[in-house]
Length: 257
Image 1 (cartoon, rainbow, N blue to C red):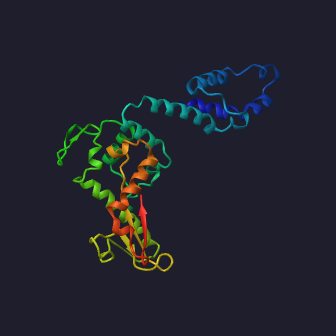
Image 2: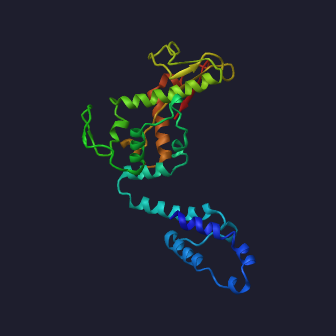
Image 3: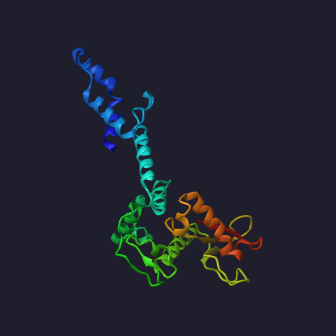
C-alpha cells in the first residue's frame, strides 16, 4: 500500500527531467509503469489523484489511501472495544511512545514483555490465556481487565511512574517540590500527587494530580470517542477529589489527564 504512493510521489517531480534527457523518439512513449501504478492506486484508494501541484508529496497520495482503509476498518469493527481501539490508535500522538529513546536511567526503556503487551493491545491481538482475576472478575484473552482493576499492582506503578517523571522534571528546573505533601487539605485527609515548595504562579505554589485513564475500559468504550472519554474523566475527577478542586486561593491546582 505504501509502495505505490512512494513510487508515484517520486515519479511526478522527475517527469520533466526525464523528458529533457531522453531522445525525442523515446520520450513520446508513455511510461507503462506509472500508468499501471496509478491504476492500482486508484483501485486501493477509491479516490481521484491529488492535484498536480501536490503529486510530488508522498503524504498527499498516502493520506487518501489511509483514510479509505481507516474507514473500512471502522465499518468492520463490531465490538465497542474494537471501535475504541481503532479510534485511539488513529488519534494524534498515540504512537509517540514508539519514538521515545530507550534510556533506562530515566525509565524510558521498555522490556520485551511490555512491548509485546503494548503491541497486542494496539492491534487487538491475544495477550494472555483467559483466567479469573484475584478480584473475581473474568479476564479474556486480550487481558484488558488488568489495566483498570483496583487490585492490579501495575496500575499503581503506572500512576507512580508518571508522577515521578513529572516530579523529576520540576526538580531539574531547579524548583523545590515534594511528592504527596501532607497537611495541605485539612478535610478528608486527601493529598495531591505533588506540589512545589516555592511560588509557581502569581505568588502561589502549584500542586498537581495525575490521572491514568484507560481507553479500553468498559465505561469508556461505551462512548467510543476519545473526546468523550476526556470529558468523562474531567467530570469524574472533581467528584473524586472535591476538596482538591475547592482549595483556598493560596494554592494553584493543576490536573494532569
